[in-house]
Length: 142
Length: 142
DNA sequence: TATTGTTATACTCTATAACTATA
DNA sequence: TATAGTTATAGAGTATAACAATA
Image (cartoon, rainbow over all chains, first blue to last red; front, top):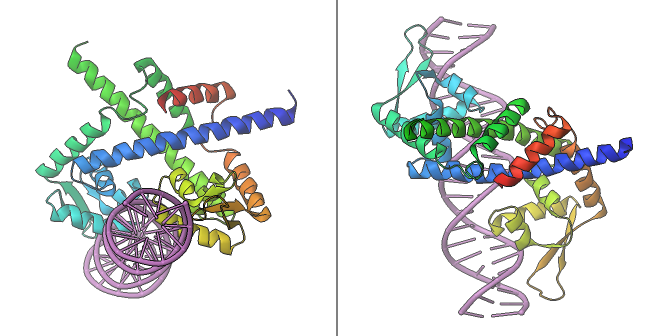
């Protein structure tokens, strides 16, 4: 195989993988949004709730969600209005507001995650050994 | 292993896979948008250009992009203004407008796809046999 | 009547810049 | 001065509904 031919087939394989990954992304995204909707949340709110595993500064939530901190205010306003989270002062630095899930917020989070992890499309079509093989490959990739 | 324990570990594996897939997809999305920006396009415009492999009714482009047809008008307006596509009448059904890439549009498309397929993050970290294994697993999943 | 594309409109997610209160 | 959070605003992507031209 010439160097050019190998480069071509490598790019063809890359192209195929990118297509496949975007295909999986579309299905997974639909599943995520459906699980959110069933829990009474938009995708973004669900993402925020899922990220709150303990008291979390707003700045840190922005970092976890990979978005600008200015976007977090509105999300938290909404979640607070619905009684799912509270803003609490950090005793050691009063600039910081710690986000804490309420009891109802905890329930909503568990409910959402249970729906998310049950029968995800794409993944559910694989046997358990195949899932482990996929996990191992993706771990190398990330 | 009890039924409950197996269900738990299956869900844990699902959760891990979902995390990994969203991680890979975030990187891939960044790579896609970067390739688009280097070609002078937004992600959405690049997606449209990439979908035009031949004369395409606007309705069909909407279907390929999995969005409402009303969104296509603005995208095509922009691409036409930049001299990358033209709207041509379908001689067999004058309701239909066929989207056709100009010479410059063809160049832009090739340029974008070349950038997209070169060193995609996540995929590039895998050996060729690993890429083939990943492709086979994803083919089963989609 | 049904379909293609267009327009008007609205909602979500995202970012930048200027502001406040704390440090 | 620098940092955490807020506000105002703007640019993308997405959807629905009503419309004109054509089938």
